Image (tube, rainbow, N blue to C red; front, side, top):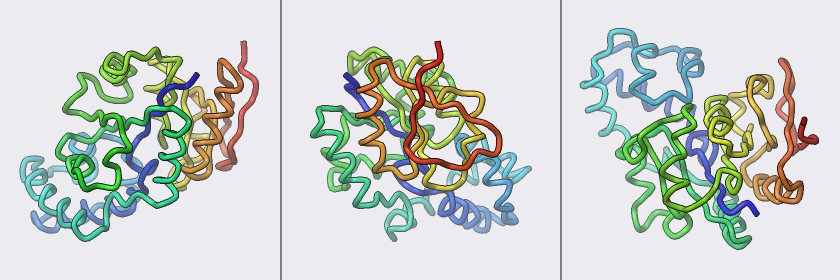
Length: 244
């Protein structure tokens, strides 16, 4: 049985790339820096924020950026512009729980960047077993050891988990950990061909399709692989027999 569904935050549970692009450019403006091009943001999307910023804004003072970022972050959260979890996604989380699966988040964000998601009055309160981030894990994605604390605390084997993410680094981490992987294509930022170097057990067009995909993987027993190739279009929930 798949006992745990582990979920990425950005462009998986929440659609955030476009909003984060606006947010980060607002931060750059407040510290007197020129805006970054959208193409640069897209090319570095999925990397930890402070790792990506030297490419997004060469020469930026990371200390100044971080200080202003947390102010603007709270403004965006308070205004309902960032980390909006759609009602259909909340319903999907509830359906996973009703099926007896633990639901957890694993993200490259820092603890400060997810603090609002842990608030007792947040819509995720009571729906998640745990949130794992850069400050409570020893290793970050794409290192497969990013799952170590999660697996240990929940007393799960990799085969009892599936990870849902939107990026090749998510797939890389899951593959390295021996955890099955579902690619969520809803944001439109990635294409199937982007995952060509990694094992993907299912593709879904929208986050709520994860419920059906997990059930299908469980029915298949050991799981199933979807092979990808350059130029493939984002597809529906799909599985192909595991290659042996």
